[in-house]
Length: 264
Image 1 (cartoon, rainbow, N blue to C red):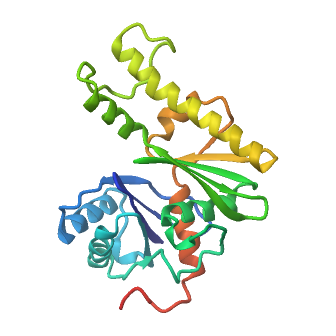
Image 2: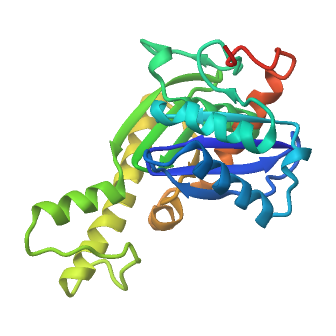
Image 3: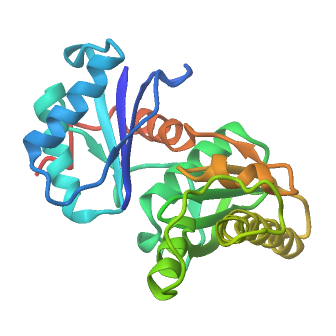
């Protein structure tokens, strides 16, 4: 069994899984740049214990990260708990994906990992939506090439900006409103955030499919996907474990490598 971790700007997603098997769990820890190696190690160890997983029985670990200042800290925390130095997704790590971008090295490792999982599990072409700190849409064509995408402001960040800039608006929960046309300030804000985000995603899907010239399989993941996607008009598959499944695929592709080039 492998420990897979994705370090995001808001949350750290972790889970355990084996190749070809279902993910044992998906959990989130808050991303905190002030935490020490030991504090992260305790958090990881506690999650494993909750799910009755013996850290000493793990075969290895893999990390993807979009927070460079935390990558080594969490890598050392993982090594402290599991006694394995984790594989870190980045240049030199095989992923089996052709990336047709101006500068492939600048593409977020989380986006690549999700595309690897998507190609393995769903019919192409693909549109992969990740609703986290930012909302990203990534496109894989019918030849399984990663051809690009879009980055939009995240739902939570947009709400925070609105509240901070409009003095008469207070913070709200992202609960679905009872109706589209709000009858009070809270309902109006909830409708704008939820239905507005859903309409944006629907519109982007239509434009992407127009440019591709064909329909695509649409997959959504990320912390806010369950809040927004049910309000979209397009058929969108929800897959909370997409990123973790991509990490195990990449780990498997690289398992014959020495443990590890990262450990320099």
